Image (cartoon, rainbow, N blue to C red; front, side, top):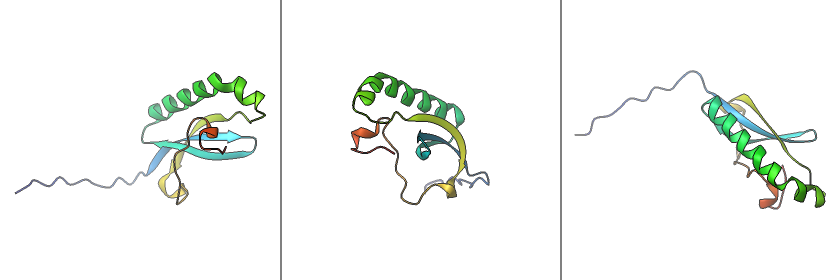
Length: 94
């Protein structure tokens, strides 16, 4: 017989979100359980944008800004999916 491990549901459903912002539009780019992981992802995304910033500006594309803030699980949009660091990889920005 297998031993079952009880995984209790925490009352704290706070996650850390990395937000992509262009102008006045913000969208959740990625979510993490810990703030350090979210900060690392934000830094990586910012580095990717810096690497392609000249290309984005020459293409008249907006340059996204990334930030980190807490978010509740129930505040995520229903069909939310993670965003690539550079939105043009999907053919769209935020």
